[in-house]
Length: 136
Ligand code: ZN
Image (tube, rainbow, N blue to C red):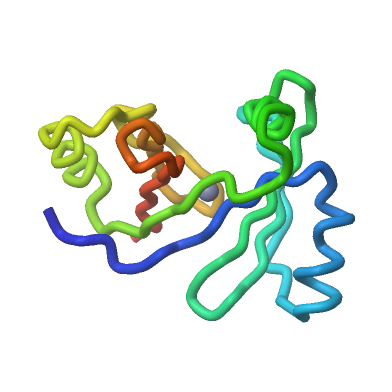
């Protein structure tokens, strides 16, 4: 398997994007790349550009959102790390062969035309890990 080319983004769970944006946008001065509601996952997301990486803030839009459950259990904080890969199906196959527990056994659609899949934190030293493949 080819190694990931870089960290694509860091996902941070927040109670309020507006409140959290004060740090990233107003204090650190990061550029807002976009905002999107993802009804599927019951979250609202904003992305900030930080060099080649993006900071992704995730705010729940419903009490039964996975992000709402995360916030309830652990409070705001680092939610996941996303690695960029060139061939997501090959990456998932290699992970599966290595016995890494996957949440998504096959790629699904993410934001910005990305194909994404998550590995379970149980197999990744406790860090929810996303693998994403940009559109070609
Ligand atoms: Zn993500």
